[in-house]
Picture 1 (tube, helix red, strand yellow):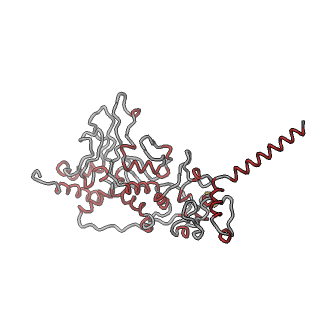
Picture 2: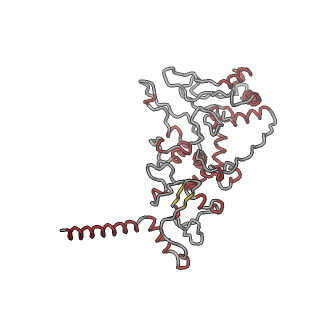
Picture 3: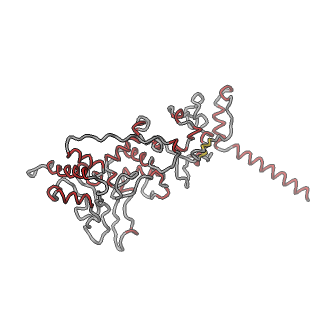
Length: 395
């Protein structure tokens, strides 16, 4: 009986060994390596070996195995014209040697994984999926705060930063201490786990980049506003998002998405982070009105009041036409001192059109701690000048 048991156990162990060997030799990465090595002649294969390849970046506390499949990433002479056997484009690896930077710090993904889907971070519980195409430009912002110095390499990131300023986003959102707190602080929006977002109305694959992109394209579709459980008892209406629809092109929405992804609080070692750009010299303006116009745009007033104060931004249940007021006629309503006091103090809450419905989402924040006296004087001069641009005589 013991001999039979011993024989059966030996056979089972042999079978398990064969199965384990077969399973290990048929993993995804082994197939990629066999295919790549099989494309090379004997001389080209000299010095190359199979097995899991591993980059250990102690300073970054990362271990990347990406080169297990992307085996030719730093070997352009051996690379093939298809993934994962292509060489890294450009000369970036000269400035970012893989043994120092690895792969995932720039490209995202799950460095320890050796299966394609998991390595690309496209699995349920991984928060940093692979940044594809132009999205990878977002990672440059972690170290290169002076985007102008590398703009030719990150044109979409630079475009996103410009659009953020031009559209007046700082009037509601703060980034690293600059901007208002009407809506969420965006300083670390690139770190937000995509699992915390509502993808009910998002059409693409659930990632943070996709949510941001579709939100920029159609904000009131992606974020309808107050949910029913957040409204007073018996309230039927769901207020849409107060994020304006700027009619962005696909390229503009992508540029803003890249900028948002670049806003992270990832604590990289100091030797990886380049010094910030020197402060730009203060511009000279031809008049106080021109200086005031610059203040208006620098602090994002146009984000709510519209380009050149023309208004038109929806503010649901606000007493004044359910919109943020246009500014063309402030000169006929306020004298100089009362307007300055309004700007300093802000107006919150905004009076409701219907007292039984939720408060309007937008409000006038206080600027007393943001604007100095000179900026405030210039801003009032600019706001008063808008009345002169209104067609007179009923035209």
